[in-house]
Image 1: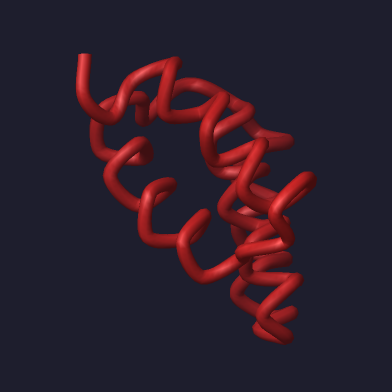
Image 2: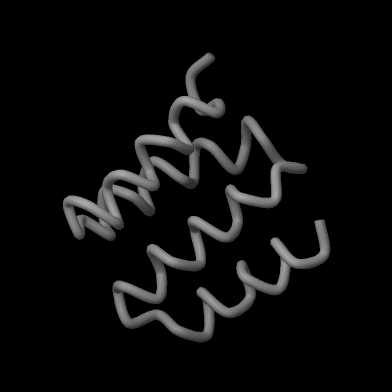
Length: 68
């Protein structure tokens, strides 16, 4: 399923292995729409945003992940 759990795995790979936070963020935005109640998805968005220096936005996604 596009934007599903497989994309979460790719997002994880992009920011942990490739260090490509911009591509990870682009992909995780689609995944957030497909998996709105999956706690890992907003956490991954937060990590990608943190890596881009957008710490305030990243923190908001980390809080969202904690509340899921």
